[in-house]
Length: 93
Length: 283
Image 1 (cartoon, chains in turn green, red):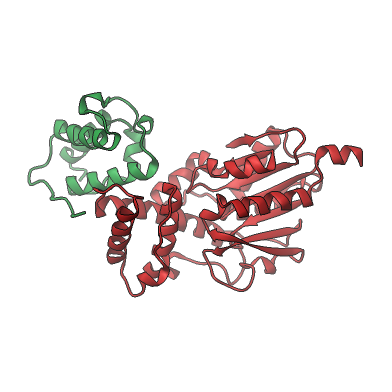
Image 2 (image 1 turned 180 degrees about the vertical axis):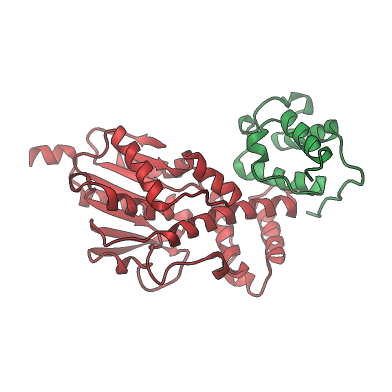
């Protein structure tokens, strides 16, 4: 229940990717290698509340807020990870 | 935008305007009790759904939503013969606006409102009118309905609390009751709360901006035991409708939709208000 510690160094794209894979695998109760990073978020067996919880926890881990539409426009783990890093590196954050 | 949850040729036609927050399938039990239920699911409109996430109004209005609903109902051939219109929450306001724009021969026989607050003077609100003490108990009932469980956290438990303190209480109680995963964090729950507020304030804004005329059809308002607003008067509808009656049911704003007593009450009401097609033919 405690707040997660924000990483000191900005995470790389593979780290964001891995964080999402681990979280979704944990929620679904499956091994991480079974999580397809190119699958749409809404095709995972997560309900909308769980997806929002995940989104809030991701922001907490990253240390910044995502646009509320980020998961709409970047609907897979691979696309969202790339977007987060591109936006940060491009000075959008 | 229109989803048919049940369709029995011998059952009276009922259309229900659903504003999201909970999936449209929340009305499945009602559909089974009625025999026929067509749900106008406002969340299928991208601009409306985006407002839920971003809180941006995007030029949407109750009248515009009603116009979209009318087009869809017309296209689906659902605006002829006897039918009954219902709406939950702000869906009731959109349903009311729909009756304002339909031709006389297309009007429903009756409008049933499920805990809807009228777009009427004295009932218009803005987000500044709501404190954490008011919002957090609503959020608890929403969360319980969304997760398909129960969470007992009376409103008085939030007295004097700010949002962060209140969310910590919800988080602990949610985990204890099994509604939330044991490792859910405050950051995760806060996101759920933020999006809940976007949807709530979107609906408050839509309702407040709508200028409604006098009712064109009789109205029944169904109010749950623990509705959003605890007032003796019928949530402002008395300012718009003269042919108005109020029925009470168990539950809260969200749980009423699945409550078997409420489902039976609305089904009975529908049978009273509309003859079945078979009865109509033999009459």
